[in-house]
Length: 114
Length: 114
Image (cartoon, rainbow over all chains, first blue to last red; front, side, top):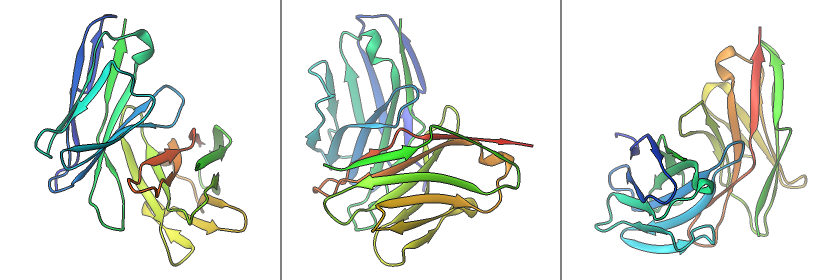
């Protein structure tokens, strides 16, 4: 098994620009999660996909954020009109749907908004 | 609602000393509990997890944790610290509302000195 991969690993952008991140989960993992981690804090849940369906969104996910998983495989997270407060590590995790419920995390995308 | 509290944002031990990282949880249902480790600029790696059954759980790299329902605790221990254990450690509880998102504590940074 290759692990969860994320691209890019680092992104620096100017305030007001749009950015898009990609997550490739472990193959055949039908569950996919996005989390955000700010400096000195634990990850916070953003959104969850089961196959291609987005089943839960956190209130942290403002209308500037959108996530997709069009074919139930990879996922994208887009942030429109970035703000300095969006600077964080964005983590993706995947899991199977069995009772073990272990989430495997990717290396993350570190976003810096100037 | 579920929550996790990690006591001590920073813990420092000598190489060879006992490591004890504290985690208390709040959950209205029997919890699934996890410890993850994060090295600088990397994603999270699962150390160990408790789902059901034996309350003493052994993980990777010599770590173990004990689920104590009466104390709502899931403390992480390692008998003898190694320099390579220096990292940030996160305790998490799984939201069993159907989608199993993880709710993390704020993390404990472990420093190991010679």
